[in-house]
Image (cartoon, rainbow, N blue to C red; front, top):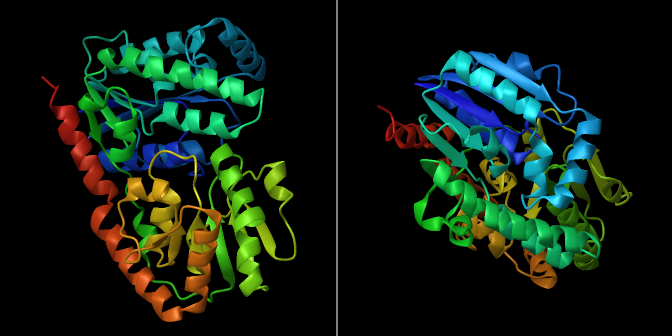
Length: 388
């Protein structure tokens, strides 16, 4: 089957969740299908990206969005009813390039990742199409709006309302609808027609590595993404002071690409901000405790999958674990407020035997439930339902 992937970002390097999901699905599907890739680029493309992607894609077209176009589109979005992010990523020039790409490669199936790409493909009624919502973006935006200050809260709430409506409007144009977890499915307004397709985990995270535990408490993620920024600040400013009361020498590592100024401001003698890491698995293996204190995110947290696959005892919130489906006090520890999260961290730091028990159980849980190969196989079955 010739499958055309339509993405809002170049899926390499893998520093963002949407890139990671697209890259691994493309890689796995390429073993049995011809993959063509059309993606937008709103930032400078990594020189290594095309070389990596050409291993799995027959044809690649990257449409770059100039800075003046981005700013102009954001201005025009004020007068539109569509979500800001849909207007931001859509242009007539890109549509013409996309139409040419479709005409030249005659895909048998079109796979759109995120609703921000739906505008490009929705008119192709004769070609079976799948849309991957990934997360319940509208609900995530609503949660962020409630925690933000005005005027950002007003903008985010407006985006929430637009997203909620647009999620319903684009649904009829697609034959199949995907989302990353049951929790997100329950939050989106068209849940009866959505298939849950979780993320998998790269086998590299399961490798047996002996690395000294030189880091105490670890949090990872793209450090310019607002939910990660807020979680990093929450960990350092509110949770850790309670940990430091019992373990004053405990150090925190915030590892991930593009740290924002507010994340960089957290640096101190006991708070490390690494920036981009070439092999993030080594950072996981060096940590005593992984903490994902997510309070506003939707979706399945790749960071939790990766940490548990690397046998790092993990602490998170119910919100994050609802998508993961692990058992509290069996595979990880759960806390839903500042005091309980701090207490859970202290418990692992003071009990090596418990930490080891959680790390083994957590790895086995991820190994048994999350596989990119299995999810790509399920995606193939879904797409084949509408093939002639």
